[in-house]
Length: 213
Ligand SMILES: [Zn+2]
Image (cartoon, rainbow, N blue to C red):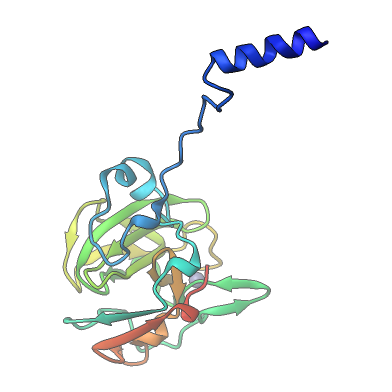
């Protein structure tokens, strides 16, 4: 027993004085991505940047407590109809956007100008397009009938990006619209008055407590 212990100590000293030789490779943390930047680091692009609904995966406490958003252009949204479903609580599940009741085939326009980050089919969201805007926020358009843009496309506010539909987990034709920041969702009605289709303000203070996962 003593001999085995002595041999063990000798082997461990010979291997480097008993220090741990193998250190696990640290997993690159995505928290370094500035949410306000239009471009993401290449390693993120290669991974899930343009493939997943939430490409940020940032802990809530590392999102700035207050973010000053500025908008230089008008919003472009279908408006006039009463929203079918608002943001927030819905039968125990959080509704991450607003539902605008429009018939299948209605032209869907980019709310603001920006770059298409994702244009894909998703089980729940159906045909979905996500656009990143220079302000740092993203808009997400779901349950689309047809997607008319591809990732990387630069679009202007009001440009037709899709037609609305009822694909994915949807109970009928409508446009599900989200406003997102750092992979979290905030109420589009903070920003847009859907009865008139106009911005509520040109400058907007987004507080962390407005964000839900
Ligand atoms: Zn919805």
